[in-house]
Length: 358
Image 1 (cartoon, helix red, strand yellow):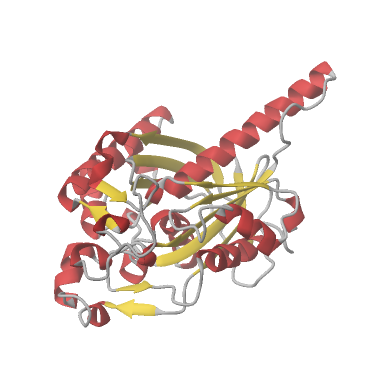
Image 2 (cartoon, rainbow, N blue to C red):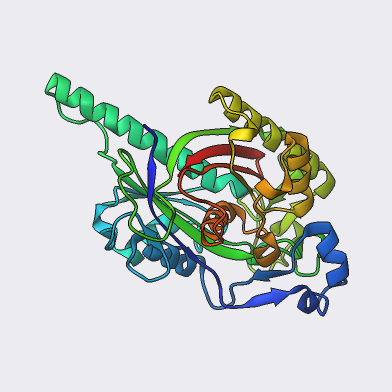
């Protein structure tokens, strides 16, 4: 059986930046941005850190703050978490990890924790990793019981995946082609393995992760990258170089994204004996409306089945998929029995798709 989501939460910065506000600092207009991207506004973290956003989303997913959802009535104990995975490009520090900082904020005293760098595919990669680790631990428990030997791995039964991003700190606010695209935010899910049980509130039911696939190809990494790493010999007082900021060759990224997203979705459905007729809702990574529409066209998927919320948030990288799940549920787009297809593409290149059954 696949893993089950038993809690979810989100956090968004208070500051909302409109396209008209952007036109005051860079050569652009709302009329130029919307047809090319579909974006009207984005949240930008001014006071909030990446840790602040991730911790708040995690606390809400656990039910320790209002604004989240849990499968059962009552909060999920933070000490019950065995692992925290944080997909992020924008950790507050190189080390300790963002996951470690969030661990202390939420009181997850028993959790192993680490960050994951998969760019915008981070949430799908995180779901896949959590599912595989819990499945491996379940098998190890069975073997330990069968052979009467000690368990030879961490007994991971419950995982928090918290995607926290502050991309506004990695874009050049004088570069029109990129600064209009990105927003900040965080979203978290708590997963466990076993029977989903009966949902008590908020989400239509506890979604089961039926299948997930991930892929990568590093050969074309220069098409979408952020520099500032150790290959630069920076010295105190040196000016910030352009490659410190996000660099993107938009047209080529568009082609690669459409091709990879379409292929991984088709593969996932075929391997599960499904067609797009069996999918109730498609939640793609919210990168750009043109990419989303092109993928829909290639898959021959009607717009009524495609969920879009980037008009409010822009591209929030790894946080966009879990933010989309929450919004789709709140809008009634997901109901008991819904089968939901997720798909993401990011720098690396990385990509992935997941199938949720509610």
